Length: 279
Image (cartoon, rainbow, N blue to C red):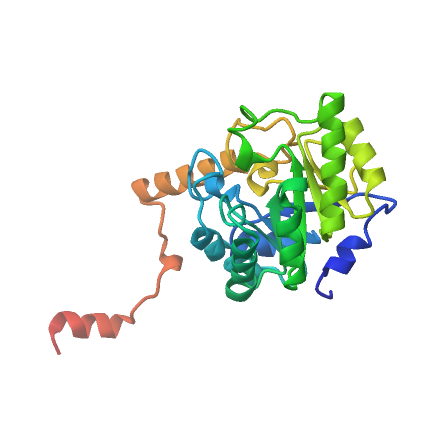
């Protein structure tokens, strides 16, 4: 298959069926997601939690994200790889945003970047796009601003906040974003936004009316036990399967069932005898 481009993603706007996107954080997960035919992979700043073990997305750095993005781009042969810009990598200034977006492209071979914010991020989006780097926008529940939002709450539940989100969507489209993530907003509002803008909307916890959907790799595979975010459908319980497998391996080692003879190389008898006799 040919490499997916931003034009490919743009063409999915208003298609007869929605398109699925997913996160990935390393070479192996990227290859698996790519083989499944997912057209867009986001190397999300959710790596802060699922890879680096932080409590929120806030602490993850550019260097930590670049390391992961590079491994994903080496694994994804077809999917468009979007690098998530971490907290304070773009908010300081337009120039700072352009510089850090450029690092993702130059050092990690990302094909696009994603950043949070609507009207307040429009100038940053325009600057990055004018530098030749495609941008995916992100509005609604923006996790990097969870302190300002007093937690991870659904956004756009009142007339004024809903109108602000529509304004944000229009602003990021005008600024040059090729698509926009809608996170944690009522499904009816997501439908209105999707009908208002001409770029694809990608929902997470935003209902079924978006042009596409995005989820976290670890969430849909059930890698974190019983924790299932409200916006997620857990398609497997790989975490339990992995623990069972590792436990079986431990038991086999402890009982001498592993390794068996077939799991290692062997010397010929005459060589063994020669070694032992010292001849």
